Length: 200
Image 1 (tube, rainbow, N blue to C red):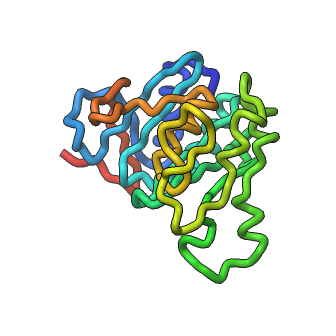
Image 2 (cartoon, rainbow, N blue to C red):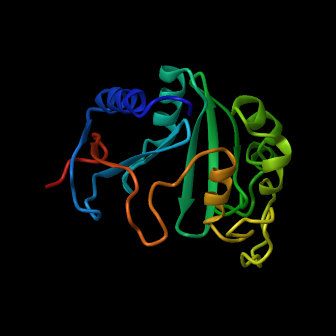
């Protein structure tokens, strides 16, 4: 999102207070269950929420309305797949999941349509992004995919690898603020809600 870290910090704090929690800077260990990280790349800000944070979509919808900017809710599930939803003015406008039948093999066709994603819409809402630069990520995976075939030259990860998320993020000018060695590249915070109590 094209907003300053302070603006994003303030908006996240507003959301956590709504869900009976809080968000504050804290120099906590990297394994703290309430650790959140805020990083900046170019003019955009990324927030990595704690592992137990269950309000990702609600928070993203809130931030998109509060900040007046498109907000991605990006997620890696059990190292098996990545997915995203894009929110604008408080509403989900599109989303992509390469394995929409991951949780249920007998889902209806409407569910596949819900998760097929719209790269043209993403390019309309996200400055500097073209449809051609991201459309090849919007491919359903086969269970046999092992990350060898990549969407674009220069990508680090391929279809079937959940970390393809990082390549997608780079294309939309976002950066995952934790490097390959696990070193945090942004500011540390404590985040808690009624569903994720503050520990320690």
